[in-house]
Length: 94
Figure 1 (tube, helix red, strand yellow):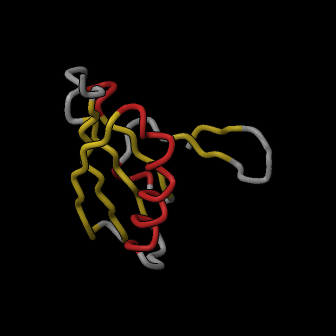
Figure 2 (cartoon, rainbow, N blue to C red):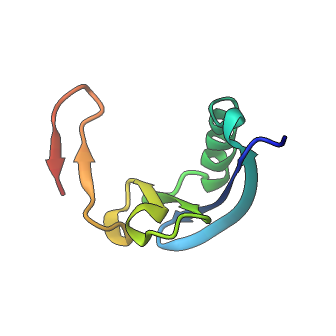
């Protein structure tokens, strides 16, 4: 029997413009192994824009509140963004 698959759309935005969109289908059991390579690939595709956002859409998730995951330095396209201090500090509302 085949392992369940997760379908993702991964989009990258830099300086307010969509730079790429990539759709992938990954077996659930392979997520931990595949996600780091995808993150590296898509991070490099953004280049060095001053404001960026990565959007991961879980295409099979019917709940719109759970369907999207967004992160980056440009909160303009995010819903209820939070700031995270990368030096181990606390999380603050944006």
